[in-house]
Image (tube, rainbow, N blue to C red):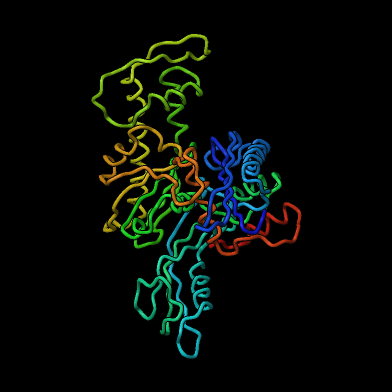
Length: 403
């Protein structure tokens, strides 16, 4: 891949999406997008290695064809129940003789904040500085150049299961790609859909995918809590299939065309649904469909609300909820979220890069687009040029600390 291009790879439960961006006069510009069905992932975990490899190969090939450039390195999105997060603080003495904070002091304090009790089977994916404190003066965003004797940092640390991450990386390698970095998916989605002002005031981002719902809570400009709930759009589709006694594909179509999560006073309508064998149809009312959708969506948002209540201080003020991911395409889901959270709610569209076609300016592409924005900000963002065996490369990845 040419030096001026960057690529992101979102391996989801229902689809794999590859995005290629190039540096243009106005900054990064999307030049290629590729998508392929995904059947080898379930709730962020590899369940069929070969199927996942084929999906990655198909998506990257289509992105390469559109972009006209080869893809060699990709920023890889990760998610799943194995992802956990915590907040920690690091403290160091300023080393310079003139008591002026330098870049080396910032690195040392960040390294100090990464010292946490970590099980052998887990690895740090991100250590995100929320804010710095210099000699008791907090709220500092960039301490370099400031005078002081003691430097502190509050850090949001995200960890993942080493085995689960190794399997994802193995699929990437077998598809002929080198991982340039790992990114927890809601951080990528946030980069593509949230404004800096929203992160300062306080915002809850929910990325509703096929198998999981990823959570990112921002306040004061930094990440306050991140997490994953193993419930996504596919479980709603499965509910519809069971409730209407049809197959999964027909249930997915019904959800997209007739589904709504909002309480509505509109007149009831009827529509036909294929039977399980696909040979016959029967009539179903929109009221029957709402009776299936509304309880499941309400349950999802209550699960999210419970997790936020557990990990976010009760006195923390939050200004809004932003919904993104494929699940955000469900009609009325923003109104349902606003009712459960008692906060203004909007749908998050990726709109921060040039070159996006209208087809890609949809919530389901937020993670893939965000990967090319957030990925290059990670520490040690590129792998070295030494060619090693797959297990050696995976082992090296598991030993790195991603910022």
